[in-house]
Image 1 (spheres, rainbow, N blue to C red):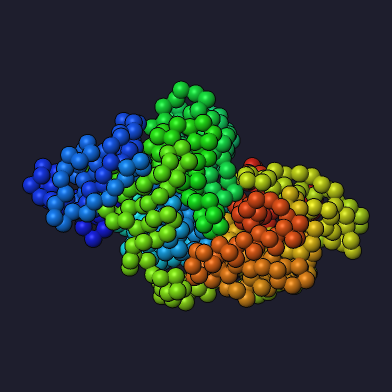
Image 2: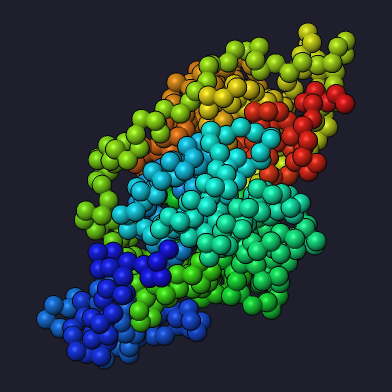
Length: 611
């Protein structure tokens, strides 16, 4: 990354420093003055009433008392009396792919809510298409008004030896990508057991990161707060978003770690983890808020970081402290505070106008000194393709090899059978229990009946299967899962973290076949079936993202949620919960294309319960 970013078409501060100083001292007229706002000063944690912001070349040059600086003949004035002026919000850990749209659709959805910058970990597309796929996503994002920074994926695949992805990003690939201009850090180090145990390849990637002068971001999914956490941090990893308890967040803060509190569509950790600061007197300079994984309907209906801030504030956090966490703290962590994270001289004029502070009521959004959104709607011309042109623009950005990634033959009913030990009428099998709005699962032993040599389904116990879909060996792992509440039908998805193989969960083998077949026909996506297809969300780009506008994808997701409820599941964001069933770097029990994995002992186990 260069030391200073470009303020859109105005260039960097190095290109315009003389002009900026001239405007600040009154020797040249400003481009814009925002009059009379209540400035949220994140440097000093105070609200400054009746403050004007003077702007030139897309940057703030002065913050003054109201009406101190006169307008020039070519100066635009915007009146903000009664409104709060906050820096643009920065999401320090997010996967664009989880929104089911590409960078253009994500930008259209989040910028009007106040998010003006995002530190993206594209490990979803990386697991399917490798560095070439990541490059496609970054190239698309390069000219959008949302400032996109890349943390290069560190774990592709996430759990080597336990799953098969569509690509491999090895230490040499990491070293190459760290030289890209838009890469700012190493992405979440998910192989935390490898860090703690001294895995050579893991530490080679960390060493390459530090040699490049960049940060390594973390994913310490263990609930331990002692020696293993210390070993993880001692390896140089400086942030983590995996706290789910107050004690975990507090332990990270006390160790100097930049502690990311997560509130996505399904992972709703903030009400618990924010207690680490609301119930203590610890300093919050290392506090960050992230969305991680957010579905399209969450963005269109409830917002993005503005939603996360509302949750934090409603759970007792001071509003200015909350805003600091997604502005100044975020910019300081990633080393971009020279440009972003505050409203003070020299900073890029990314500004969020708020009608109310406590409810984070976003009224207008400015990027690079230009108003781009008002009342949740885009007002800037020519910064995004028209919604009618969206699909064509996305298809142009992603060639056919990125849109035809499902390389698998449709399965038959017999493929989903799980054989029982010989001559038994029932088995005691390990069953994955999912938990609503949590990333963790738990293992339960349950008695299941045997019919003609295969294990039968039972009430609230479904079968899960993961089919390798990247043109490899066509392997399939199987197991049982409970907690979804299905009483009939099946669901399937190629969003199956992190290798994104074909994941199917159902109540009978024939329904699972129908769900798998339809998902393959779509070139990837999400499907719910009973005797027929009930709802579907096509995701042809890498099997992860749609080429449709965000609003249309959001509507399809709502219909999919209705279909899941029709099948008996009333969990919130259930397909996001399902998508983590194969993620073998999270506790306790997971299914990958290679089999059923005990992720506490990191060993395969028999889904029939045999020793």
